[in-house]
Amino acid sequence: MIDLQLNAAGEASTDVSELRKVVQGLSRAQQEHQEFIDTIDGIVWEADSSFRFLFVSRQAERLLGYPVERWLKEPGFCACTGRS
Image (tube, rainbow, N blue to C red):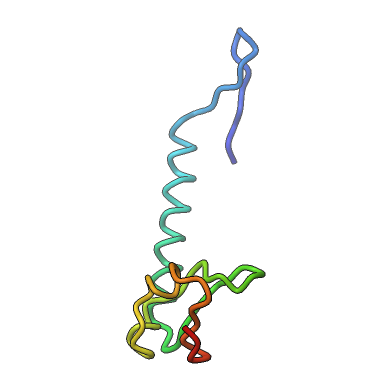
C-alpha cells in the first residue's frame, strides 16, 4: 500500500521507492500478459464499438498473412470476412 503523508506545507508526499515497486509490478504484469497472448495459437483482438481494431496479436500475420499494421491503420479492413 502506498503511504501518503502531508508535509508541513499541507502537500501530499510519499516514499518514491513504493511508487517504483508499483510501477515495476505493473510493468512485469504487462510483459507476462503480452507473452501469454503471443503463445496463443489464434488471433487475439480488441475493437471499439465501430469495429475499429485497437489491438491485434502478432499471430494474425502468421495465420492470415495480413500485417498487424493493416488491421490497425486501415478503416474497414477485416481479414476475417475477406473485406478490405
